[in-house]
Length: 300
Image (cartoon, rainbow, N blue to C red; front, side, top):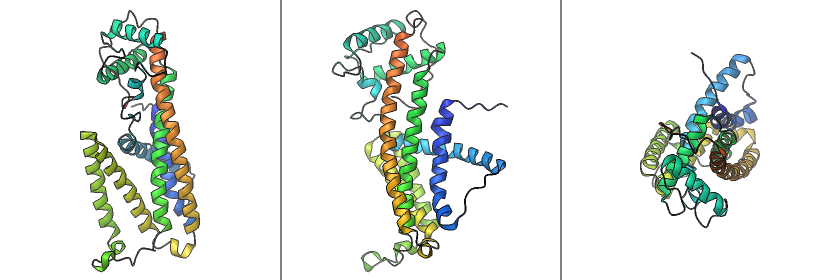
C-alpha cells in the first residue's frame, strides 16, 4: 500500500501537529534538559505522531476557530453581496451567469447564503475535476496551517502558565469549605475535563452554536493549564524557571494572534482564488455539472 501526502496533509496536519508537540515538550527541555532524540527512527516516529496530533488539533480548531468569521458568514458568501467591494459588480454578475449556466444555481446577490455555499463547492469541484486548481489549493493549505498554528500557540499560552504557577496553588482552599482543589488527583481532574471537552465538541458540531464553541474552547484551555500545573509540581519550584515560562506564554499569545490574522487573510484569498480560477476556466461554461462534489474540509 502506498501512502501519499498532499499539500493539505503537510500544511494542515503535519506542521501544526509538529508545533503542538514542540510546545508541549518545551518545558521539559527547558527545565530537565531532555530534548527529543535526533535519530532517524525517532524522527519517523515524530512525523507520525505529529500527523496524528495535527488531525486531532484541526478537529478542535475547526470548532473553536470557525471560518464564518465575517459576522457569522463565510467569505465565499459575503464576496457575492451587492455591497461587498472584493470583486467588481461586473465580475460578480458574470460569475453568477456562469454558475447559473453550468450548475443551474442562482448565485447572484439576491440568492441565499446556502445557495452561494453550494455554488462555491461546485466551483471548486469543477476546478479539481479539470485539474486546473493551483493557487486555491495553496491558499487552502495555508489557511489550514495558520489556523492549526493559532490553536497550537493558544494551547501553549495556557499550558505554559500552568507550568509557571505550578505549586503556588496547592494550599488554596475555596471558601474555606472544601479541600484544596489542586490537591485532588491530577488524573481525576484530567479525566473530568476531557469528558467536558468531548461533550462541548459534540454540542458545537451538532448545534453549531456559539455557546458550544465557547464551552469547548474553555475546556481545552483549562485542560492545558491543569496539565502544565500537575506536570510542573515537582520541577518548577526548584528550577527557578517561572519567569522564563511566563515570557514563553506571552510570546505564544503574540504568535497566536499573528497566526490568526494570517488565517483570516488566507481564508479570504482561498475563496477569491476559487471564484477567479473558475471564471477563467474556459471549459466550465460547456462542462457538465460534476457528479460528485469534492468539498474542502469546511465551507468558506
